[in-house]
Image (cartoon, rainbow, N blue to C red; front, side):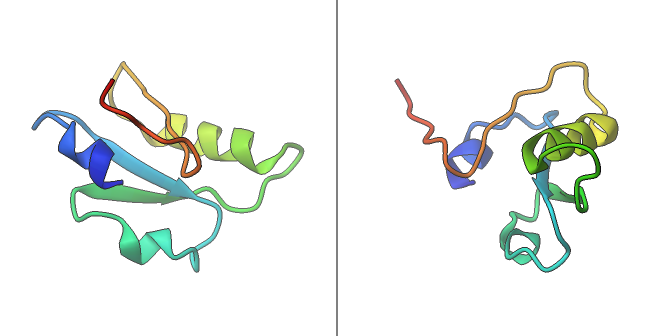
Length: 75
C-alpha cells in the first residue's frame, strides 16, 4: 500500500476493500485510507464482490484498481 499512497494527490480518495471485518488490512491500512468491508459474496466470487463494494462507496469519477498480489512498478 505504501507505493500507492506515495502516488496519491491531495484530492485523491483511497479505498481499501476487504472481505471481512477481521482481515488484517483493517488495521494495517494507512490513515489516509477508508476501509470498506465488502462482506461475503452472494451469487458471485470474492473479487467481483469487492469491486462492486468499492464502486458503490467511491465518490470520484475515475476509479483505479489494484490488488494485493499485483506489484506496482515505477516504470
